[in-house]
Image (tube, rainbow over all chains, first blue to last red; front, side, top):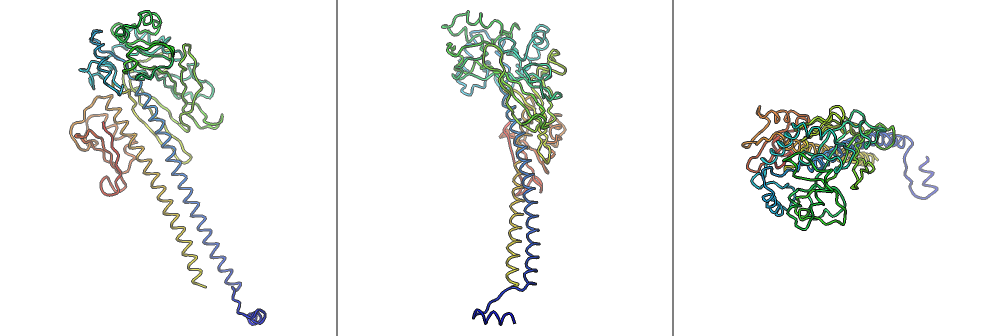
Length: 351
Length: 119
């Protein structure tokens, strides 16, 4: 009847849905939509969880890789003990050919695994000496490498109790997590022109006729390591415009950088409950001044450091404080959905 | 009329399936990336321990089957190694390379994932 009316009024046939058809279509459409929205949500949630886990993993491995690279630069500086200074100068010429700069001045015969063993032996011998242990006890990690440096002959890694040191910000500190002191010795390849702390082999000065002895013996006195046959490197402070001996161009001299790595109990806002690994560096200035801390990674839990080799206990640094030849670092990276444990043995680069 | 509904439903279901496939693929890629990070890190850990313990690995082949040296046994049982699905670790003496292979279908076949590191 209705169709007939429409035909009459418009002069052509008008089709359309009945109420039942529309209701069925709407029900089906809504059902499909609900199913689709649910599926989309599930897929997005799963993707987000997976992406967060991947991001957390990446963050954790970035942190571990960065620490690995820094620890690699803490190699002990060691000159072959039996070399006369003449021979040492000759070996420095050999180093000149080593563009990588990763090799410390060691007689070519001893290069390789054997030389690494020697450095470890030197560590052990040093740690066994009562004189040197006393010296180690007096080292203040908050001071400059010149005033209170780690002996260049040992690895520049220290594990400290965070609470004990004023250079580690004490508020919101993750008390249970040990702090890591790194003294990096980076080879100079002609790029060490800035003011800073440098570790310089003694033969470097002796072979450089243009330099006066007061410079080496006078200014560096407080940073010199008096360990008899091990006293092969000296820590010095050099101004930016000061002349550099030749060994600043062949990798024999090292630029010394001191930094502290510690854990605090918040990342973005105080009380957010997300632990963060922080890094603080000592300014390259004559008087000790620590720069602002920078966050290396957030969401880091269960931060643990164990000494793996050549461990020398340093009681004044706090309970379980050690100077370490290598460390075993473990932590967990937390994302919203899961926690990923990462562990690695970090060792200095072979000399 | 029915054909309209069928086309609409087919389109909607195809869209959902496409989403599922993409979503699953994203998750798979993320998981693979994570496993690769983990394997690389485990091998860096191995290299570090080898430097500390001064061990020379002799000969090519599987290294997690033996009982010596002790630190290799401990490393093979560590979480970062065993949590990779069906992992196999071998050493190629000629190239001095540590190779890790893993996958849900075992450590051989087309879908195996591989990472290596020069020691």
